[in-house]
Amino acid sequence: MAKLSLVFCYFIVLVLFFTNKKCQATESCEAVGVYKLKRGDLSLKFTNYGATMLSAVIPDKNGKLADIVLGFDSVKDYKTDNTYFGAIVGRVANRISRAQFSLNGTRYQLINNDGDNMLHGGPRGFSEVIWKVKSHEVNSHITFTYNSLEGEQGFPGDLAVSVTYMFVGENNLVVKMKAKPLEKATPVNLALHTYWNLGGHSSGDIFSHKLQLFGSHVTPVNDRLIPTGKITPVTGTPYDFLQPREIGSKFKELPDGYDINYVLDNPNPEHLKKVAVVSESVSGRKMELWTNKPGVQFYTSNMLGKVKGKDGFVYSNYAGFCLETQGFPDSVNNPNFPSQVVNPGETYNHVMVYRFTAD
Image (cartoon, rainbow, N blue to C red; front, side):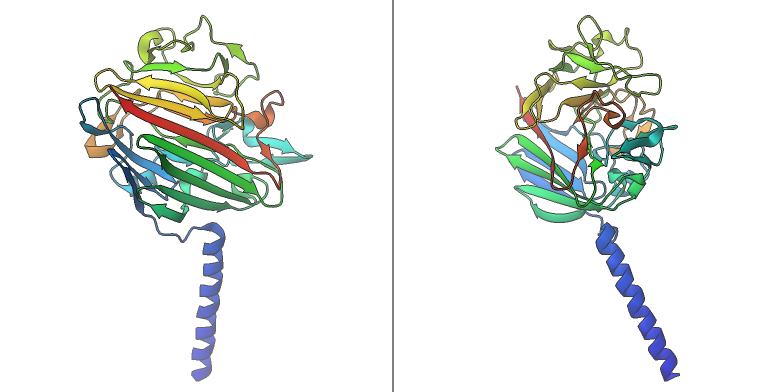
């Protein structure tokens, strides 16, 4: 009987040891929590599930506070969400055609989750995993980390990833995304998939928001939303936001709404470039976006349908807009697009800066 108890105890120790090793490797045993950042009148909440932005409460021109981010009341609702509300998406954001690509002579078959294609890193991309909270100061920043293992969703090599949300000044939010491949080259294209409505998350559609977007070309797509490989000018098309105009002003010419990658003018990976300015007249809120990436996906939440969100409000199509700075979609299969491949010894750096004002 004593020998049996000893064997049983040894077995338990082994189970705990290997379970702990697995937790350390995947971060999957990290507890899910909600974390707050606050400075002045700007207040944000995040969760380490998907390194997701849950809310952004900012004042309007009269000082009235409102949450301008679409989402859910409970973190558990994000676990069954298919909208990617506020999440960090990757290892490769946007679509990869036929869920496959070749790199250094090897063909990689990924896990498809959008017909035959891969969308936002697959069915268990970075938006669907639990990140580790590396550091958190309420009035300063929060940093999430995740170790993506070789073969995850079909991608090559281990990848160490971090995302930091931080304040700069009173009304600037900086998002820094970094990734380092450990032993193999791999494509990396992270994006923040926040849905914004400057009138407040429950204020209705975003048609009257004015947008200026500093991209004079787009990458057209086929009926499966895969880029054709062409780069075409926006002049004379509904995609032209080079001068400020209401988002809904040309919906008659584009009845399905916007869901396309803009080629940003004069990109420089070493410097920040203004991407867009969005304003809403009733609240007076304005948001500027800057980045060091070459593209931005402009999406007008065309496929929300009816999603029950915060405070029981039901989000319909066009209830929010996304501006996801990124590399070009399906770059791994388009050699004329900027490469997304990151080699060992290199670091993927992606910076976004949001500047919020109201007048």
